[in-house]
Length: 226
Ligand SMILES: [Fe+2]
Ligand SMILES: [Fe+2]
Image (cartoon, rainbow, N blue to C red; front, side, top):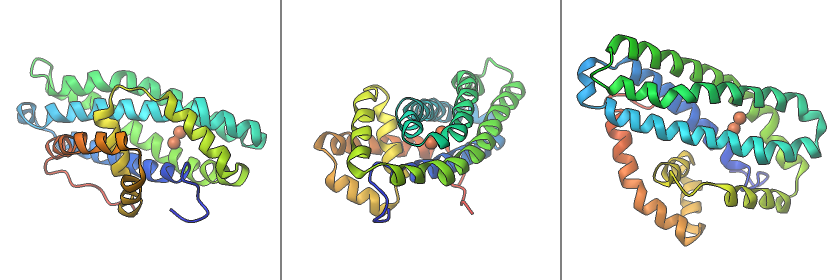
């Protein structure tokens, strides 16, 4: 995080980066899947996919309900780009409707393996490629605008509204996933200054989350972004 970037905006870049890494890694994990993995890593992989899908949908809801409307009101010229991004969110919502059940079918020995793998792979590739383009546009044309058109206090007010709106369910995935998206220095800073409840939730959920990721992606390294 640089001095010119507000604390409410900086995590967007880190979260987007994590989305690029995770969607690429998931495609590789599905490509490498074999029928024998149904008694092994495909079960945790389905659980991970459900958590990631929930998190992605929530991220888009926060953008659609809070950040984008605030920006278009302050900066109407951003409206066209934002409309395109909101349209992408709708396409992603359609993919995510099939996402969890398809991942569960991939782990289910009563479902034809070849069909299940082809279905999951098609969804995963579509999501990876759509997000790659979507996130590049957001990072280049939208996220920087927040620091240009809002004061730090205004961004903090939006952020406070977002935090209030967040669901209390799904924290066992959401908290560690978001914290671990941050670069190590920012993560340390956050853990040092975050409210007690957030630090506690992270301490409770991080070990099990790490185990889930290790089991789901056993033998599938994290891709390096260019
Ligand atoms: Fe985003
Ligand atoms: Fe988005």
